[in-house]
Image (cartoon, rainbow, N blue to C red; front, side):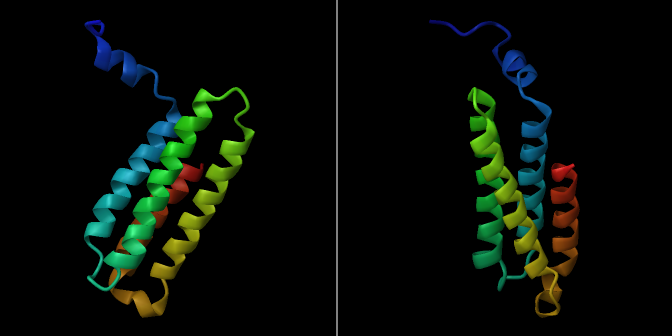
Length: 113
């Protein structure tokens, strides 16, 4: 079976704004994590990327379900975990990554709105 001629446009048009913002946060975090010092990339960088991807998958799953409440509650918890992880990067011991963490925190706050 051949896909419709406008396959890409239809898929793009179907994305709801919250999923698009979660995708934008994941892309932004990827850029910020790449600028982290070596000491922070393996643990905190991986954790941030994992949480961002988990948020995206949870929102996509919620979008496809009739009862969205459980997935949206999980997504709220993931956003809180992202905030906590970003605060760890803003601590004085993580001074090398604090500028990237502030930018990532701003991206996460915009996703929460």
